[in-house]
Image (cartoon, rainbow, N blue to C red; front, side):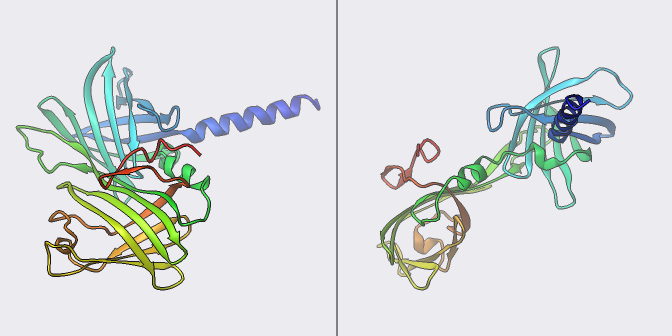
Length: 280
């Protein structure tokens, strides 16, 4: 019995861990009720989400594979007998409801789902958070900001196209002196995808804040923003117009960038490459 009890505990723990990684959802495609089950496979790989769903009352299931992007968006392709028969584009709203579209060719329906069992967070990728835990507290390093959203800007009934929108970028910081930082920033601002790029030196103005101030030949005003150091993150607060910084019409530097590497990549012509490829 002494040997049997630990085995039972192990089985109970394994079953618990398994059930936590699966999430069950209920909702509708158009007016048709559906039931869905999703789970993560290998973390942070292509098609890291798999699952299945069926129309309520039907026994045949359609298989699903796709990805979670950021902390709110799911993109799932459905298959029946290995043939792609449609795709889901879903985004979690403030009421913990996944809303979006189901699209198959020219056919499309509104789709929504709510979690009936499990935790939606078990479906999400935490790649950046995991990388951040491995970094040190120094301000020098590589930082990222990533936000994803359902971009239906060009969606029409005649052309039901949806893409996964992206808002974010990279921030590279090198500490030249305890009061001086050298940085390079590249950020994409969706849904119109204008760019904000800047590089230069920022100077300390208090214990946690550095200020960047620069004037270009293309503007009578100064480009100004602050880099505020937090716990393994940098918050940028822009205090001038985007035009003064030479940014795109709807681009901006504001955001919170999470530290993911102690190293910094080689910066070529102000564009930053290989942030995730750096090895400690």
